[in-house]
Image (cartoon, rainbow, N blue to C red; front, side, top):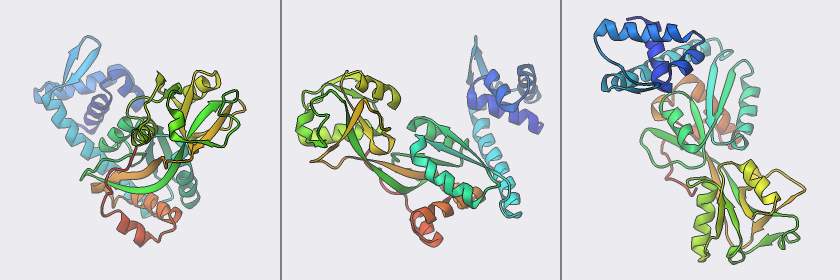
Length: 307
């Protein structure tokens, strides 16, 4: 069994695609196929079930994936350790985030402290971002909501007020705010179910006894902004994510405190990994806390906060 065989298997198992694995490793697809096939033949096991163009992990493949996840996480940690002995002048920090707005300040501060380190950021929805962290594809994640999980440590970072968007020709456009009861009967354009902003606003409507009149569900902030600009309805967005637009007004909700949150999350088992520690030390500075205070805050993950 060779390291290249395990690396090829791991890439395919993570992506469930020989093509994507080859692209990730920078080799040809036949090379990946040969490596995986030789591993299967060497041990007389089937690691993947091939169903036309689709592949699935067998039970043996799933078990091996659990091992290779730990193996390559340890390999990266070893590289991080060796890099730290040189003063963290080189290395690769992988960050997952639910949006660029929550992570920009952290990245700027980290880069200023460690200019020689390479940072890559993967932006996705909450489910994919959390899965990447649990699968060791990222080192830290920035999430709006974290359910209690003994595998995770979550550090509260920021909260942002939720605002209502309306087109400039709407009756609300000349006002600075509105009350929750005024939302009733208005046509609403919302994010997909599970969106942190939608959950927070839905809860506020329930608390106020307001019935929602949802006319459209859209999976991106940018598309919601365009729909609002065209007069289809009112939209809801985190204030941090609102981009000034002459076609749109942003209104505060004056009788309800509606927020989305940002948490920095990492695996509990990796809290002493060098790059993770370096990132958390920078975070501690942003929070106005000493490194020791930041460390104490990491010991116990908070309960899930409102989404």
